[in-house]
Length: 289
Image (cartoon, helix red, strand yellow):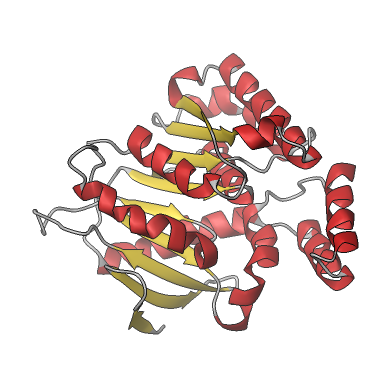
């Protein structure tokens, strides 16, 4: 394991870790900008897609010092990829963030084909993307976070016993939703920005149906879901379909007695610009003082 100070992000330390699965991960640890109580144990908020999202989300640690907000102190843990794999994060994330057996529907194939035809992706990139979607292991990645990374961070940081959170957007939002539905014990809050439920046959619907029994043994959780106006009403078919599926997930959650767990917001953003806005919405909603 190596440890260096990340020069481009204030209050941020970086290290690398190899999981039991053999996968390598880069970890950014962003502390509060100020801490009036330096001995106070703090909750951890995990953010996936670290190679890209850390630059959008870690600077929002300043919200903890904003007198107009009430965001409670936290330590952000961003998780990404290392070395040469960092440049391929947009494909590797499929392996780690998508639930096992998640179907790839015709709309996804059409979207990738259109990307190839427009020149924004090569055929090789399309093939690699689909290959990762054929072998998805969100279960393995979730176990890495909860059973390997979290204990490691507990050994080196002043970590509170409760109050930890998980945030992701797009497939990261799908992963956060999956973790919530799995009943993962270390997390109290889940921020699911534009969850990438691209298929109406998504595995998350099977997990929703099992929630009533799970809720009998699981402590209360907070799930914050955001969608963006341009996804719901825009010109891109896969985002409109995703929005319909997410709304269907929310309807099923209501029917299964999860209304008190769930908050939701529609943002005036796009699928890309909504990442930062969704994270801020999650902080203000789920991590207020």
